[in-house]
Image (cartoon, rainbow, N blue to C red; front, side):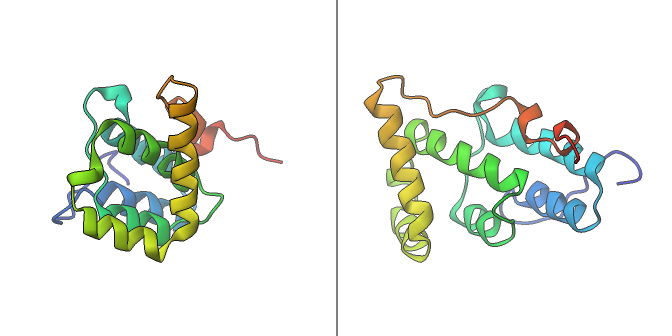
Length: 142
């Protein structure tokens, strides 16, 4: 945090940034959270080209370790439908994803509505805000 870099936490999946964002949240470090959010957005969104797939472990971690109103949860909920439409998750650990959605039926319902909405209007692109929409510094404090 002090040197403006993100350390590698040596894990089998790309959860480092997600955990660092949560650390910044616990420390109430808005600038650090924004720095990490930019990295998360670049890693998982289509804005930077080919995004990294959300793994079941990453989805589970994100869902279990973020508050419903957090910027990271909002980004996760906005990106997951795009990942499902464009990145062909159906053959990718289908059983693990089925178990995940069985544990989180509310998330399953949200994903289904977003995917159905994107297919219904034939645009095929659930809405994802620019990165600034997920930054703490862009929020007006009351």
